[in-house]
Length: 101
Image (cartoon, rainbow, N blue to C red; front, side, top):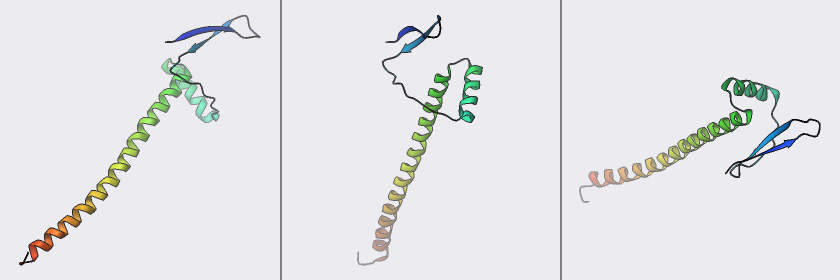
């Protein structure tokens, strides 16, 4: 459930709005101008708030990180399976080459 609350800044007679979404948590984030400037321009060009642009960027990085970590785990598992397969193959080779087996 979303709650919109209006506040009046003490130096202004105009309200500003704060949207409170119980599913979201606020953070404070300091960014260098070389990241914040383009983020602001791209958000404006896309017609979305800068916070939404940053949320999307974080979500995209989370997806990329998940895929990269999954690839690392898969490679590690593949190496373990390969090592086990080589041991089994050696055992079969020994049995095949031993006429008394």
